[in-house]
Length: 265
Length: 255
Image 1 (cartoon, one colour):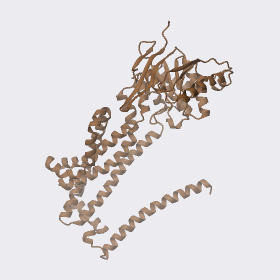
Image 2: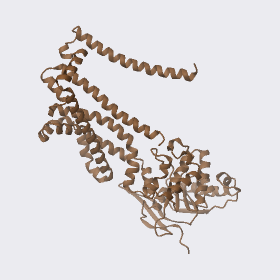
Image 3: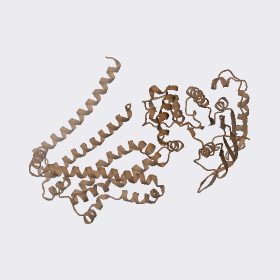
């Protein structure tokens, strides 16, 4: 074996071991959970077990219209995510364009961002009523202000010499925005999207806790109220999978972007 | 008398902030003739970059006047210390940047860009990203980005100082000859005296801040061949160097 082959083999082995350990850890957790519930080390009414969760999942799928709930949550998360992006992008551009405006609004944005948005959810119900509209507003509110601040400060960090370059080539502020500021911010925008998709999920679930008659958040609250803890746990596990899938989607967007920029053309 | 291509007449400029004002340029007068290659040298922080901003119209003089031969400000081609090629654009589309900004992406201009890229050996790498190119190639690409706009005046703000010694000799020869071929006026700002002597027709020595002219030296080198290395072997080179060195040293010691 050459040194190079040795290196490749070692590298592959390392990554294989990592993957095996991850899967192993997960399977061990499931097995331990199942076993402790089976032998009564933990109360299966409160803590369920993997087999109970699976049965519950099938039952919910058939009898409790799980897909409908899942669909609503997904729709509300998607709408929130898109609206967060559109609103914060537009606002950040305005703030960048009008320096005075950004100075005026800065303290307000900081306060709104620091505020725990879940505290607002009950108010949203009073103002907007129950239903999807309130849930989407809750979803947006969690990420919006942080997103504006982060985008705007990204815009501001654009290399001043690159801006000077556009100016010396005869460009105006719109040229600076479209030719330098936005393209230079794309990596920042993508990593912000990764954060926002998670936050939109949090916001929507909080919204459904308070204002939903449908959705995963509703199932969790409903399950707690009627003491169907298997339903609660199953919903939470579905939520985990959903969060992971959404993150993966944004991540694959990032890969697509990176590939288009590093490859020729 | 013929109007000079560019003239500073008793120009003063100060930066203002809440702590007070900083006089960057005071009572500064000099001229640049058409087609002349002028180097401006001075101690660091003496307001050289302010002069460039005054020429390009980013700043307006507080006192005095900046005049051009033409009534309008001429088209200015900038080269900065870093090439500022955009990493998200290919070499070709970096070279198109000026045309895009000026809304002049006409077939003729693009043909000219193609000619320039071929002439300066960048045509084969036109679809590459800047980080795949060497420092010298990047500076050439940055130059083409301004050349396609047909500038009347080149402002070079220490364009070679970020390069390593060997690349620097090659690139400064390269860039200087490209610009000389165009026959346009050039203002080179540098703190490298050897670079100034070997490239310029005339050197303007500035004082410490607030900058004013303490000496203007026309440079005549008798040497065979062109280029930075040839210039350094000219018999007059050392004399010029010593005069400039004393000027700068004297000024810095007084402060």
